[in-house]
View 1 (cartoon, helix red, strand yellow):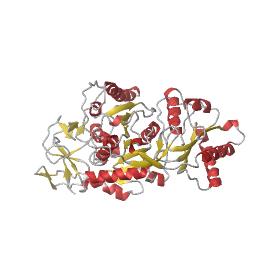
View 2: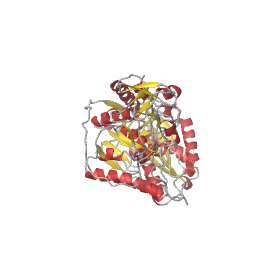
View 3: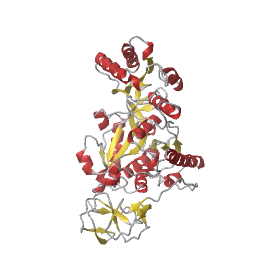
View 4: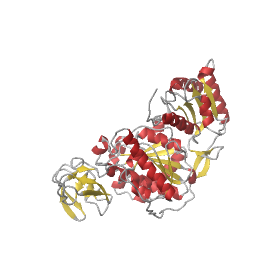
Length: 496
């Protein structure tokens, strides 16, 4: 393993691949450079002397400017580097498309075909509360149902999609709650759903049912707790009815074109843009070549790299939707009197990320090089195959929930710091570095740190692709093994 990496030939900094003690000599482009400070793994080293105001170049693009002079071998980080970003910008459509390096291999996975033509990679039984007041009732219903049936097959799992909303909400917050929960009810990973209400909430069961449109009445049942004498008994009966409707469910071969994958990162570090995120980018291009669908979200972590996505918009309509995606989210910050560029997080900085541009240029590599075929607002469901963009904040659980609600059957989540959480769809963790993988094997599902240790990118991609197909065919990831499953709904307004 090398000591240091220069990512792009235009860069004036390199990334430490391991802790570099002060006085150590490293080789970059055939030159010997002496390190002038103790530089942690994942952090940046100056390759040339630079004066105050000079742009710091990483990934071939500016990630900010220097506020002090630095010499060759100096540590370049938050103490001497600041963002170049400010305000809301204007953009122009200047398309630049790259050829997809992959071909359709006619691969398949074993999934569950639903009556509406969609495909699930899990067959789960869910209770979806319309309001947080009935979360406890839902848990009791499941407990009794499981005691009565014993083996829950053909279901893989039973869970309550617990949340604390559904009442005392107005406007967009009320709509967001109803929309996200409605999308979950009709998600293809659900083989059956009981929608459980209280009876006095503003997210009423009657209006909620009407908002769903057409649905499978054998698989989706509704219960209002205040309307019956024993809501637990009635709920258990509903689950038994769903169970009977699902008794013949089985996996069968379906093409990879039916796979819809969410792309997310969190707890990023200085290796995220070198290992795990580029791996997801290549996987995204591969799936798009198979006719599949990938979705990039967390809009605030596109700031500073948004033009690279805009120039890949398939047409002017999608370009303008991308512009609105970016500027609407900036306006959201301004409306709340908050700075647009209050990022990266403390954990990101500890891991070597210095500015939002640094973070965004690494983050957007998850989208590979494919054409952007559509842009979704928060709560919208996928309509177009290929690479999509989705409006959502960077918060891990909110964004992962939004990806699932958009129709993604699985979320691929890269991390350099580690995180155990899972959303209501399988949430696969990909580590940016091997030490994290070795330390947290009960969290991390796949190690992209191999890319720093001599493994060939094509070999790692092949292993990753095959693993994802196995997971899509039923192999559990760690959040499922640990039973860490949650949802979070975006909130921006008042609570009554």
